[in-house]
Image 1 (cartoon, rainbow, N blue to C red):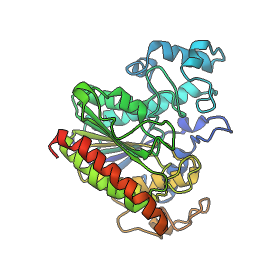
Image 2 (spheres, helix red, strand yellow):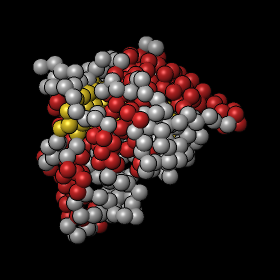
Image 3 (cartoon, rainbow, N blue to C red):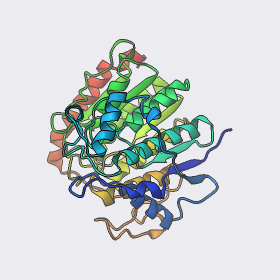
Image 4 (cartoon, rainbow, N blue to C red):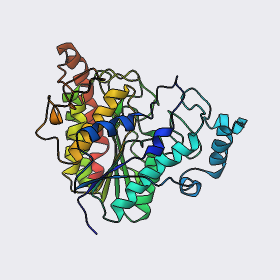
Amino acid sequence: MNSNKAIFLHSPQIEQYSYPPDCPFRTERAAMARRTLVSMGLLSGPDREEVAPVAADWDAAGRFHTARYLKALREAEQGRPDVDGLAMGLGTPETPIFKGLCAYALLACGASLTAADWLLAGRARTAFNPSGGFHHADPEHAAGFCYLNDVALACLHLAEAGRRVLFLDVDVHHGDGVQRAFYQRRDVMTISMHESGETLFPGTGAVDEIGEGEGRGYCANVPLPAGTCDRLYLKAFREVVLPLIGAFDADVIVCEMGMDGLSGDPLAHLSLTNRVHAEIASRLLQFGRPLLMTGGGGYHAQNAARGWALVWSVLCGESSEHDAVGLGGVLLGSTDWQGGLKDRYLIPAPEQVRTVGPVVEAVIESVKRNVFPLHGL
């Protein structure tokens, strides 16, 4: 079966869970994005469908995470944390223990795996799981609000089905957990565009991290300086990412569409508008490959939800004619910008461009020098 359908992974069940009130991670962002889409009529139509995910079970999680870690995770949620769990990162301010933690993590993973299954079966061409994107989790360690790595699990699932997978991470934080998962493999290529580890967690993702052994050249990192604006970000995307995607010639593309690179995000320092994310989504579609997209970071909840709604409109082919007024003239009164889904243009200060521009240019040239020759570019 071959379908051009776009599916949106969400269910009322996933709205039941939330991190502690003092934690910046807001699970309700996905529901906020969905409500916006429903109000605009963008979740109904013959070429799109809302799909309730099937929660992953512990065996599925164990395809990436160790049994020891999964046991510690269950024990911690049940109020029985131990020294091993603490050493695995469980119970820190960025990985707090809360009621429903395991159910939420398994459901988020299940949503990405459900999306992968729809793509593998040819039942959909694009799939979006706004509740996914937990790219920092390792097989035996939690970090950065991430406990189970749905993205690594989905990429593994697709690769085990014989697909060549291109993973692009545009979350502002480096996708360290996914990179480590595939660092010595060439059937999954990882590309991460992120704020430099010199100024932001997790401190990894330098230009010289390009894979090892069989995987040499199948990992690329584009670390960008604080203050990077739309024009410079998209320059790096067009000059580095697009050629590498073309050279790798994947069977399926997976993209973590984090929204924490947006200007004003409280946990990061880039100066982007969601117009960047809309263009990235549009350009990925042009490769004509099945596309699995997840959410990720985004700590101004309203801006993140609005950005994901915009990206979904791109995936459905609905956004090309809409700019400042938004689809249907919707006014999102809960956000700072009430002009619709797309952000207003941000004009960077000349000094900002003079300071940041040469750094971005140097990053672009470093990636071209380190990685491009390994792909005949």
